[in-house]
Length: 536
Image 1 (cartoon, rainbow, N blue to C red):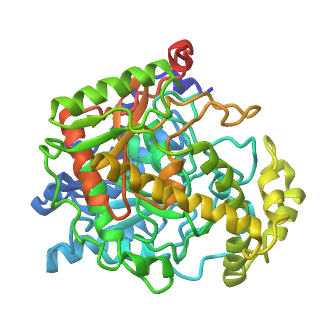
Image 2: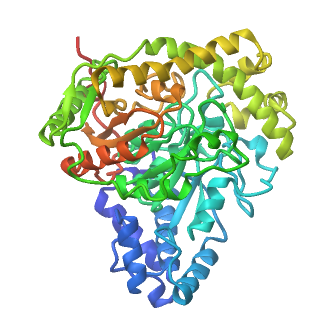
């Protein structure tokens, strides 16, 4: 543990501001030290830039300063795997464009971080955290990166992740990659940040960027968002194109926004969503895409809303159960009608079928991706690379899942088709439950407080309610719901396909009524018993 891991919050903020001043290089108006960037919303940042109080270049410098002070030094969060060397030039050009033509929209001049499995053309690598892909540059922007550029965002850098989207080992540690090392939870530094979008969640929580983009196959947006005290949305399958994103499984993969507020997540979603020819799954989104997901946000949205309380994940953790009951109290106080309990189908059966689907699809999808990109030829070549570089790639855990995937046959195998059908049954289970009780959405605790980073047992202490929505390809939103022993916990809203606007509205009303978002405190450790205590 670094000695600076014991610094208090005030000391860290002092380091951050000092670093920001050092980056100014005497430019004066480029860096306005009177503006408190920490916790600033997209709307607030845009207002400052429109008023001339802050420039995009100054804002970018401030975030780069925080990355130096908190990520590369100080508590060494290790969330940012690479900073874009062109970020300041992009910001300068966008400042000039604002003066000449005005802003393109709500993301003009805003620094955004991207998960390292999202391709970007130019100087940054796109590796899924694997050293095997470090020397193979991406040929073009992923659709997500392209949309961000078109919206006038500053591509600030790439975030660390659980290598191969946490599909490498049965004993993996979330937030660890061969290329990036271990990302740490900013609330308590010896705690797991959850994954696989670990770096994106930590960066947003620690104010290293305005917003970030993560990806999810099952829990990889909502779980780290919950563990790091931010808002995360896993959209319906096909709402956002996966073109140019290193795949895990095409039947479940999705990119999604990670932000400090529901409104900011809604803004980012509107800029990323839409059909795109390179991803056939987006054809299903036609007629379901909104250009502005903020229009429906209403602090009274819970009044009269019918919500099903899914208790399948209760009794996992005493502190989480208490927070969940408090959250249900907030929902009731805001006029929500709770159906409690609303029993969802056999989630264990989903998980077993899902593992089969992921093994088959990972092999097929990754082989197709690598054939088009160049570099390692296929999954077998990745496995061989890891064996040849064990000291760098496998110092703590192996590649059991890669080996299991390599042993699978084609997507025409009966075992795969049976498992896929079982996963798809989650759609009927969710829809029928909503229909039976006339529900708008389902609510559940997203997961428990972060467990210890443990290179022996891996992620054994992590759990999340993500699987039903993940295997169904349905949307899932998590919003901060409080803390257990200084560790954040989220409240989940999930429902039918294409119900993002409804979920965001419900989550916004809960957020406004509860106000649980808190900046991280960078504690060295936390008490164990209140975190892991169980009922019964």
